[in-house]
Structures are given as structure tokens and as C-alpha cells.
Amino acid sequence: MATKPRILVSRQVFPEVIERLRGHFEVDDNQADVVLGVEGLKARLADKAGVMTAVSDPVTAEVIGAAPGLKAVCNFAVGYNNIDLGACSKAGVMATNTPGVLDDTTADLAWALLMASARHIQASEHWLRAGKWQGFKMTDWLGADVHHATLGILGMGRIGQAVARRSLGFDMKVIYHNRSPLPQDKEAACRATWVDKETLLREADFLVLVLPYSPATHHVIGAAELALMKPTAHLINIARGGIVDDAALISALRQRRLSGAGLDVFEGEPKLNPGFLELDNVTLTPHIGSSSRATRMAMAMTAADNLIAALSGRRPPNLVNTEVWQ
Ligand code: DGY
Image 1 (cartoon, helix red, strand yellow):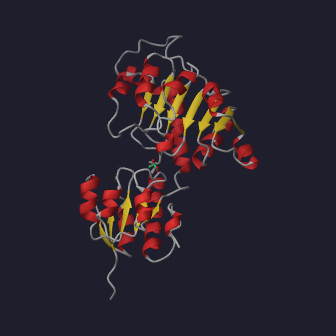
Image 2 (image 1 turned 30 degrees about the vertical axis):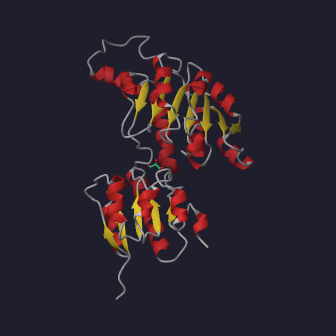
Image 3 (image 1 turned 90 degrees about the vertical axis):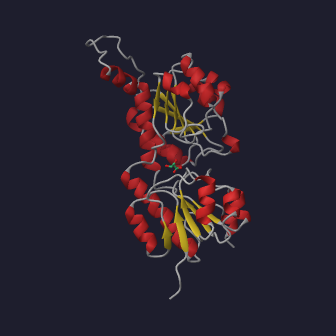
């Protein structure tokens, strides 16, 4: 009987996923969920043909170099800035992601953060829990109206469009900036209008960031961009840490040059700039954009589909570095 290819699943996943993979592969799992890092990945990948990775796994050139038999890196995420794509392509290693299955869940979280920021949900709850509420008061926790406000979206891919579609019930004006405008039917479905980046920054009451991270999008929102925003505006980041200059954002929030922020991702996460912890006008969540059970299951199963296809000689459905496929 032919031996099965050996794979690594780098982080804890649902048992159903491991079971499915065991039907095809000899699986080295990590159900103890120890974060492996570069050295751990190098050690565990030396004898593997494939790996299922998470955004927390640095798949660097050094890691790829230490895995001579590696054919596929299948990320359990839509973003893949944790993978050195150039190094993968150079070594003929296929890299894949999980687009589509997490759009709605991630858009839902953008809205949760937006509403929380607009209405001081998190800060007022902390105040209440601390026993500070003396009774109803006309001027307690005055928030911003979401309905009829202007929603700005930077990055209008599938998740950006899902965020925009959810605004229809709030009768918002929707503007967006992308390298190029969407086709008319897609714009119409979200009632959204393309504007240049400066107009987006100046006019949005709520600005949602949905860009992939790359060197080109590093600190796309820094001090100069924050200075263009309305002092009453709120910034929501569900994309990646590093897109926003966190130190500049903290300074703008501290000085109330920006009303509030809702953040799911951070520069250097899981470490946070401690400045955020001193602010009551920022709502913080620990990179849970795609974290519903159904969606995380769908992501893991999509990554498994990619791995199974890649290691059985078929083109994986979500190949990112398409140049490796001849
Ligand atoms: C993604 O898919 O890129 C998310 O950030 C991980 O949940």
C-alpha cells in the first residue's frame, strides 16, 4: 500500500477537520495549540509535503528553505501576509487561502465595532459595571447617529461590499475608495460611489478599512490621513495590523481629533500598544473578525480542500501564487 503524504496542521483545528485530513494524509497535528514560530515550523516541516497554517504562522523564506519536500502551504485565512509568497514560488511551493467563506461574518464584526464605537457600548458598560451609574441623565454617553451618516470604505473587495450592503437599512450615504471603481451592477447593489482617497477621508463619518496588508499598504492610515478626517469620525479596522499607524491613531484619539475607533487588528499583535488601554474611546477585539463556529469550520474545510487537491496533483481551488501551476 502506498504511504500517505505527511502534513502538519500548525494550530488547533476542529477534530472533524483532522479526521478528514487523516483520510488522505499522515497528520502531525498541534491540538495543544502551541505557537510554533519560525524554529518550530522549521523542525516540524523538515519531513512534510504540506502544511495547514494560520495567520499567526510566519512562513518565511527560512522556513521554506528548511522544508525540502514541501509542496503546499494552505492558509486557514483569506489574508496571507504571513507567507513569503516569493519564497514559495521560487521553491515551487503552492500557497492557498480561504476567500469567500468568511465575508459575511467579518462584515458583521465591522458593524459590531462600528455600532459599539458610535454608541460608546464598551466604555458605558465598563462604567456601569464599575457601579458609577447614578440614574438616567440627559447627557450621559451621547453618541453619534449611524443612520443617515456617511459610511466610507477603504478597500472594496467582497468583504467591503458586504459591509456596504449592511448599511442599506441605516439609509446611509456610502462612499468607497479602491484602486479602480467597481462595475456598475456591484456599485448599485451597495448603493456606493467611488471617490478619491482624500475625499473618502474628509467625508466619512465612519471609515471602515478592509485592505489586504502588504508593503504598499503599510501605514496607509497615518498622522496625515487621520488629520484629514472629521473630529467626529470613527475609524474601524477589521483588516490587518500595520495598515494603521497605531501610535498616530492613539495620539489622535487621545486628543479627540478623532471621536472613536473600533479595532480588531493591531501592529505587532498579539501585543498591543499600551496607549490603547488608557483610552475610553476605542473598542478593542482580539482578531475575531471571522470567528463564528460555522465560518471557522468553513475556513478550515476550505484549507483542507486546498491541501487535498494540491497533494493529489490537482490545482487547488484557491491557489494564490498561480505562477507555480504550469
Ligand atoms: C483572515 O482570514 O485573513 C482573517 O484575518 C483570519 O481570521
